[in-house]
Length: 160
Image (cartoon, rainbow, N blue to C red):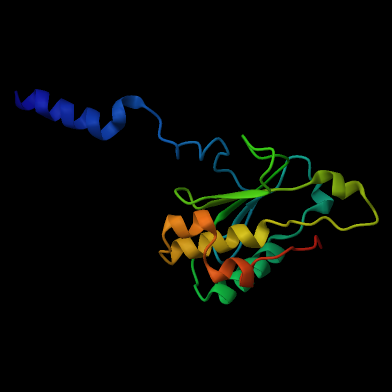
């Protein structure tokens, strides 16, 4: 009987082998190309040529500015720059609070347009989500964007 209870406990703790949503980070994985002093990790989109990739210091500066604007200091997220968002044709970015991951779409067509700089419209916005979650702001505030920091600390970022 004790052995059966122990086996049942082990099975329930292991989840019967069913993968959790965070094992593969919602399909995005955990790999990154660079890490900064704040803990911010960046993975560049596959289509981004190495000579067109901003250095980690550029992303760090934006992240630190957003943190200061919100008034909360926390370890940086995993930032994944993607050619398209899994399961979305509308969003420019999304924040995955359970894995502390910001996913931002990069319009790679802009990389080939010499008259305009590429923009990451969702970068600061997703950083705001990250910092507010770290501060304990409840999910319903994130869902409705009912926090002043979304207006005060977000905005477009021109590609360097």
